[in-house]
Amino acid sequence: MNKNKTDKITVSLTKWLGIALFVGIIIWGAIYFLKGYRYEQTNDAQVDAYLSPINAKVGGYISKIYYKDNQLVKKGDTLLVIELDEYGLKKDAALAELMSSHAKLPILTANEETQRKSIEVIKAQLAGAKARLNQQQKEFDRYKNLL
Image (cartoon, rainbow, N blue to C red; front, top):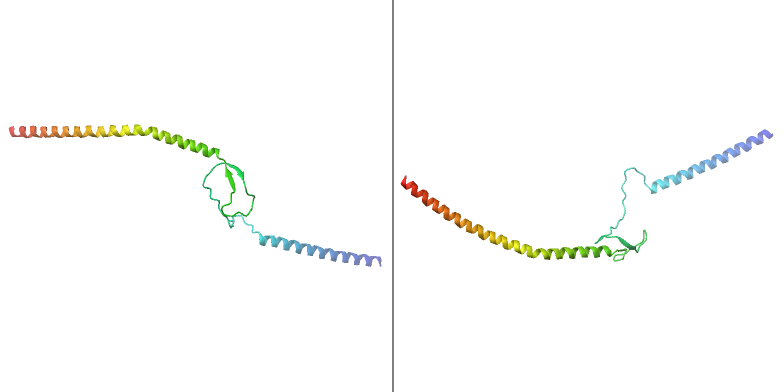
């Protein structure tokens, strides 16, 4: 009788263990497939998302940030502050370039005047060359008649 009772306990225990194992496998499978259904897995996927690019009108180093990750922002919100030191340097560089350009103006004016004088000299040389050509043509015609 003792053996029969032990067999019943073993069969009952095995049955409940099998049911628990079956329920566990079903729960694990449901969780696995629900996660797989919600999140796709692939080796060469591209992410589609609603992205709003931030249009930076100027570049530079950031001194202060006014937003947190995934925060809802509206048009016109200040998201960060850029350091002004770099802009001061750019302003100084632009001012130096402007002063350099102003300093080059008299030189360019002098170069322009030199070029104009060179053109006048070349025109005078051209007139002289035409006169020599005319003289040589007359000489040629004279020698041709003599010959």
